[in-house]
Image 1 (tube, one colour):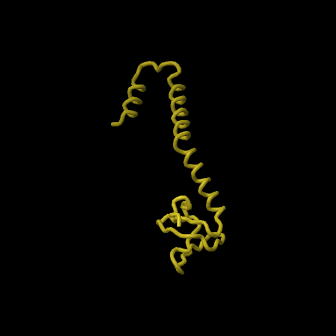
Image 2 (spheres, rainbow, N blue to C red):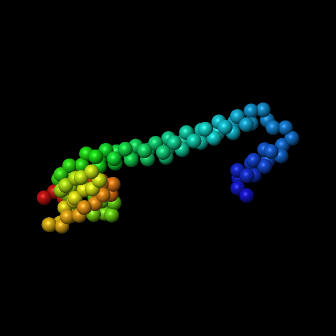
Image 3 (cartoon, helix red, strand yellow):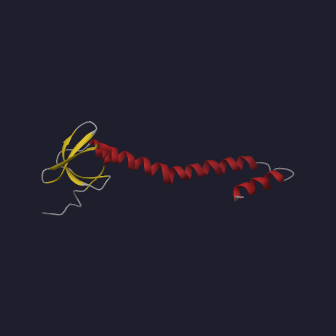
Length: 110
């Protein structure tokens, strides 16, 4: 049995429930939801919005990394796909959603 089940069984086994015990439960549930939203959901949404903004602002010449770890330079952009130049004459067409970050600051200075 888990702790929540034991606590609920003990609370229901009491002869007279404490006044306000039910309201305390709801306050704790709401507080738990607020904490989860503040530490988990909100930062993830912010990160998703930043990534979407980055993908929409792609332009020719940007150095990018795909979700599969392929480094390349953007050569052509369409609605849902991007043509990236990988090495020499090698070009790959990838889905725009597979581009995860810009690596211009990580690129070696030549």
